[in-house]
Length: 77
Image (tube, rainbow, N blue to C red; front, side, top):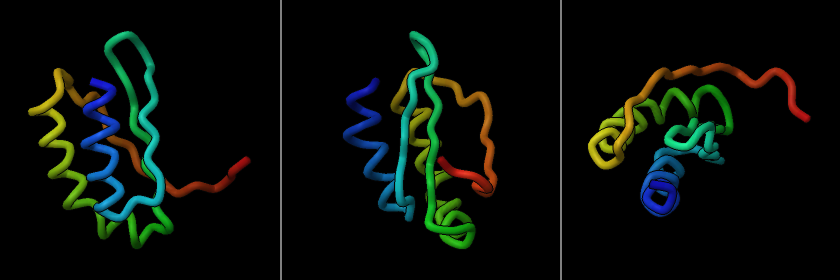
């Protein structure tokens, strides 16, 4: 699962307009994805393609997407 995520899905998300993608293991069989964009406009522009990528991921990986969240970064360290 990790190699497929690294080799297939991270490049696809980057090609949709993301500046950075982090896939974070949260358990033995779970992970979360944090995707960063240059700005809100770039994020909005990418959403149709991101939805297609999510659909493909659900078909290729033994996973169920639990939730989707979005927001604007207001602090960074």
